[in-house]
Image (cartoon, rainbow, N blue to C red; front, top):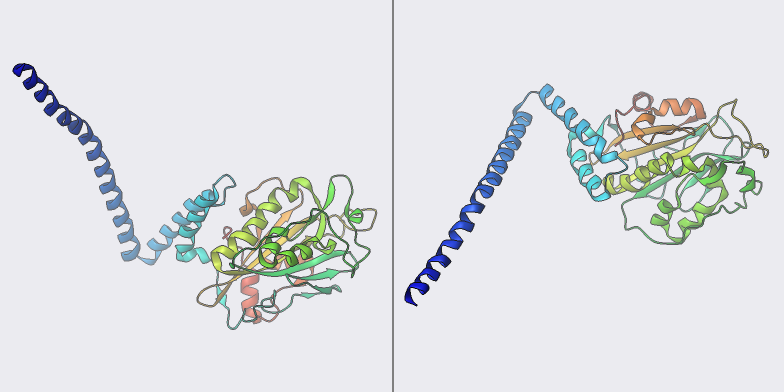
Length: 334
């Protein structure tokens, strides 16, 4: 009996030694990886902070290019995209071209920055609590819808699915914007206006003057993606943004029986004041037959949008500053 007890005690003592020895190689491997990664991070930080201007610029461009694709990909989960945005925005050159902003943006009640856009065609300002619509009564379509969005807590309300006739423009109805695959869809998404103005925003979004003919594929595809970036992610990332949105028509554009032209494209301009008080801009021009969802394919300049819409944005900026910013094309979406 004594021998058996001794054997049992011996066995119990050996078991933990075997378990400890089997885990040791795994722990050592993980430690080596952490040391290597830490050393690599320190090395990159050293190269960046002590390197030349050209070295830092190259490193920033490489980092931006690496982050840009996954953070803007539609399949990237929202929490991951938000984390990548944080890294992206921390890179100094991610701001792009920034001009002197001066006293711009001091009026929180105005959706315009650097003045109301000027038009070479007659437009009627339709004032709503959540936006101002520069409406072209001749074409029965919005020339430009201007709104300001911030990062305040988002509100809730029920979104209406169909447009409601705007009493100021009674001729514009849902039927007037309908033909086959072309159906009336909102230019400014209801979710954006509801998030800022609750039920008031829902009412503003429903007005027919906020609608334009779009195909279902366009409205729920590339335009929806662009509006998610402009109206949701940008206010969260930058605190506030000013947006100008609208359709683009050409002289040869096809027309519906109502006389309303079918848009050839839609434009979206985002304006942001940086923490240092600088002004920067991002412009998209998305054709209505666009199939791709990569917003970088539709980057353009404000000057190009002005040329085809006959609008002039940022009229209160100094000419040279406006010209510089207006002709700039961002290398990628923010």
